[in-house]
Image (cartoon, rainbow, N blue to C red; front, side, top):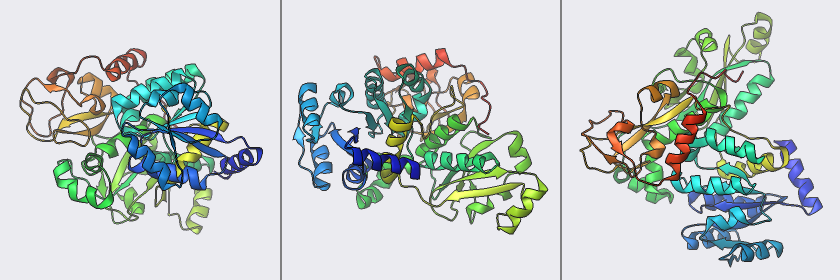
Amino acid sequence: MSMVFSALERRAEEGKPIRVGLVGAGYIGRALALQIVTRVPGMRLVAIASRTPAKAEEAYRAAGVDPLVVETVVELERAIARARPAITDDASLLCQAAGIDAIVEATGDVEFGASVAMDALAHGKHLVLLNAELDATLAPILKLHADRAGVVVTGADGDEPGVAMSLVRFVRSIGLEPVLAGNIKGFYDPHRTPATQAGFAAATGQNARMVTSFADGTKLSMESTLLANATGFTVDRRGMHGHRCAHVNDVLEHFSADDLRERPLVDFVLGAEPPSGAFVVGYDEHEGRGETMRTFKLGNGPGYVFYRPFHLPQREVPLTVARAVLFHDPAVAPLAGPVCEVVAVAKRDLRAGETLDGIGGFTCYGMIENAEPARADDLLPMGLADGCRVERDISADEPISFSDVKRPDGRLTDRLWAEQEAVFAPVRISAYR
């Protein structure tokens, strides 16, 4: 990342900052705005779009900036030309305006995020997704549209998939084969709801539905799907194993390194130290190289655990933007079509006529599954679940299929899903070694 930061410093010296538009001013969006405005050389946050404009204004003011309200593309372009930060409730202005190099989509809303993504790509903007929900559902088809437009669509550095992908690249660069990768997770209960998580959400200033998606494992499955699609690794079973470990280094007590070499996996460890971050297992069976690894206390091999004990998306996303704009280099992007998906599962007994309330709600949670069996069983992607009407009684913890629900009419996400299905067959992709 030193090369990326050096490139940003040169941009600052040349007076040619990367110009960024941010869509979404929630918990992470506000933190990202503060980071770009106050700590990132060679980058300008030229505009924030939020469906709640007061939040966009708050994000700028927290960084010591007095923003201008704009209502048209012309007004926004004029503000950019005058170096006047702008806010709007219309994200399409950011996508369409000249003078913006990259859009960061940080809403966590799949349908809205999809419309922003397609608008940004159609207007030649690089796109950074701080929206794992959208990324896990539609990244392969979004990448196809980005490739056609000659721009980058990417997940974020600092989020767990970005941390894991950096480790994957590092492990490869020192001559090992990555064979297992995933999150370090502290808590997991698929039946958590916004009611059970309300207190924690209030105490941390976060949205209760977002916090619920962390606790019920949906976000974990979304992030693991990003990693699977970027590496070609699969899951050993629906939902992964999630072995409990005292320390992440103990993960190889639960897997055979030789088996992993034959079939690389994504998975997670639960309740392990360190309490956050991501890990990768690298494989090298060579005895001579193994002697050096033992000397430097990496273990006896042939599997070696590498991890980073933190993730800081709000501080690292600017580096993702710079990588995309300056180097055309995605942090996390699918190799091709879906390797894994996140399927919807009933959180409680559901009755015909109920409406699913989607990610972080009361009715369903998401579990990662390999794409081939997910499509063979016609399972409903969690990213498409919101607003679907249940057509039959479904028992708690039963996977929900497309035939179990009636989807809302006219959704962009359904059209993109159909396009993705038409373009990509769920086939095994060669793992990223």
